[in-house]
Amino acid sequence: MSDLTKMKVAEARDALRAGDVTSVELTEACLGAIEGAGALNAYVHKTPEIAIEQAKAADDRIKAGDAPAMCGIPMGIKDLFCTRGVASQAASRILEGFKPEYESTVTTQLFDAGAVMLGKLNMDEFAMGSSNETSCYGNAVNPWRRGNDDSQLTPGGSSGGSAAAVAADLCLAATGTDTGGSIRQPAAFTGITGIKPTYGRCSRWGIVAFASSLDQAGPMTKDVRDAAILLQAMCGHDPKDSTSADLPVPDFEAMLTGDIKGKTIGIPREYHMEGMPEEIEALWARGREMLADAGAKIVDISLPHTKYALPAYYVIAPAEASSNLARYDGVRYGHRATLAAGEGINDMYEKTRAEGFGPEVQRRVMVGTYVLSAGFYDAYYNRARKVRTLIKKDFEDVFAQGVDAILTPATPSAAFGLGEMQDADPVQMYLNDVFTVTVNLAGLPGVSVPAGLDKQGLPLGLQLIGRPWEEGDLLNTAYALERAAGFVEKPAKWW
Image (cartoon, rainbow, N blue to C red):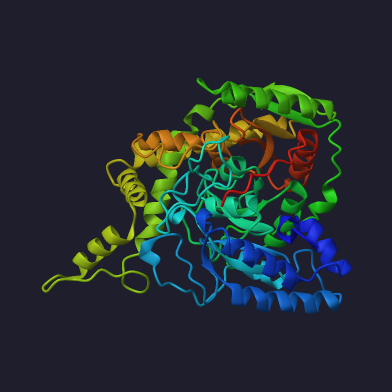
């Protein structure tokens, strides 16, 4: 069987069970593809020995008839997930040399299900970024190109390495995390599917924290069915995580009927942003038509506090980051600065953090420390929390009116060039999250589905936002949209 790396999770699962291919063969094909794709810089810590060992064990399980859906599936793990004995740096110099002696709950569940880890994937430092340009490993590169232009494009962020690896067939699927759009934006930029589940659906234990009330793990896959399969393996209650929901995990794949007749889809008028490219508006309109043709009822809705989402997010997220990142001081693990004669503990803290954190992380820690300071706590942080409550209530009101899902653009543009935003105001980069941050602030599930190409041949995505804990219903609507859009394009190989 040729082109093994191009297989989807569902196809590979069925082929493995039928005996048409082995997990070792699949894994070796992916490892070979990774070796030939250094130009993408998607993998930052390769684990071929672990992968082959896990693949052999998976083949034994399949032969014995003990094969969960993810058994034998080669995948990549974002560098934010702690993996026992394997470097887990969150793409930061401050965690250089850190190899945890424990496993994150999500990766534990995946490995217990027989999944195969090919390696750790590139990302923005501590998940802070929208372009994968803040990584200590260097930029991850989008496998897509603008027409005949050789300029390197961003795969999005922070899960840029995950998106690039899935889009370039360097794995069958990957894990990502989403704090303000870090699964959905890179998925849209690379023509793949990414879902951020409801906050609390996946355990955060063992995932390096950025903003604890916003972070959520999720799958990045080649299509909606694969997302449903991987999400089910990642979900479940975890007593080690106090925010983990003690709710049953449904069979998400079994809910993919594609039948959305009678469903009500809301179109929020506030997402018609000033200056939005015509291509994004046209894609959104086409998405609306596709869902209507599939039998859904389309209604206009209002989410009046949307305009406050970005400023509220960029107060809350840095505040939580400054608190979470205070633990990285050079004392117990990771990077420690070399001190000159006569320098003391405070000098060590200052020098270690100055050397270990990159500019974007430093910026957000400083902003977060400022908004949490005694003189500004009420003016900024408390006010942002109140706005967050209002944003959440906007969604609750809409869902109470009978809306089943909300359709929006996933991003305000297609992928931009690496370095193009280098001299821009940081706020310009933050605007990449304009359609995605509300979902994190409200703790809702959101999925990005590839729906078309722009005039330069780059993928564009549409976002569906669902009711809390109803990922199955959301994925079914996404499945209907996916089938109607018929997006099958892949990047032309240049790497």
